[in-house]
Amino acid sequence: MIVDDNLARRNALILAFAMALAGANASVVIATGTLVGRMLAPSPEWATAPITTFVIGTALMTMPAASLMRRIGRRDAYRLGALLGVLAGLLSAWSVHSGSFWTFMASTALCGAYQAFVISYRFGAADNATPAFRPKAISYVTLGGLASAIVGPQLVIHTKDLIPPFTFLASYLGQAAVAGLAILVLGLFDGPPPKIDTSPAGEARPVREILRSTRLRVAIFCGAVAQALMNLIMTATPLAMLGCNHTDTDSTLAIQWHIVAMYLPGLFTGALIIRFGVYPILMIGLALLAGCGIVALAGISVSHFFLALILLGLGWNLAFVGATTLVVDGLRPAERTRIQGINDMIIFATTAFASLMAGKILAWFGWATLNVTIFPFVVGAGLLVLWLMRQPQPRAS
Image 1 (spheres, one colour):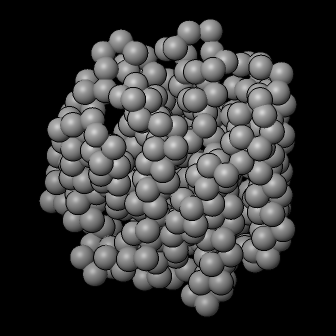
Image 2 (cartoon, helix red, strand yellow):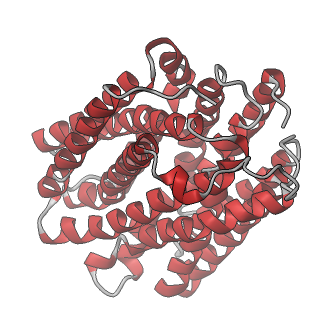
């Protein structure tokens, strides 16, 4: 594998652009999924089920996506993933037109399968990077999601009523269009060639041996906590805001600012990790996630929702990029796609459960109880990171 920071920088910028388009695709689902679910679902507690199938689609596709990347290379695999996004948008539009809840859930699962490829963009950016540049390469890609914070929600706001009486139908056609554009952009990516099994024996360690690493297990756990808590709160927010007599435009804008907060730190997260180390940044991210819960418990005005989701996004970025950096630094090149697939499968299986429980906890116990669930997981992850900081650290590979 060629290690060249100039190539890594170019690939990171291409993947950042693709991330912007893919993030817009996903943010359409996030902003509308529970609202359409509420309209089509057999009962209110199933309103968040479309977001759950979105996450399940991601979880189920992570390992096949990793295998496909090894066999045909990242570029072609990424483009096939974007094709799933096109199909997802078209099926969502058809589901709204026909009023079918079950096909709508299938469409969000397809969009989730697209995201299984998208979440690997951060690893694709790190493939050709030196250890010193890897945090920045990963951070650049997450920064690409910043544009999606504008494109996705604004796409929803300006298209939701274009084809009456089918609310959001035009939004889903737009979702298909941005995924199609991503296919073109990803054609410019210049990643490593497909893996051919000619590597020297012993280059890649057995999976069981790799997963015995306490550092890797803590990294996976922290990534899962960050992603699951972010999804738990974000999924329930549109329903909670409507329940507090705010408008669907208010909830869409809240999601927009949340996504801005998720990706804006990409400007500096990598540099902060290089300057201060991964563990302090990871701890700050966990603290910001706790801050989200504190603000959400303090009130139910629009400003409370906005500030809580901004803190949620900031905390997710620092914690998730930090956890990703720990995963990447502990692996040899020949091991990365397989272990990264396992990492993402665990993270998004956990997130799928969180998104399903979001609707049920909100319906049964309310918004306040939902936010209280943040604290035990953040404290647990923080204690593990503090313990890990005291252990001898391996050198980056």
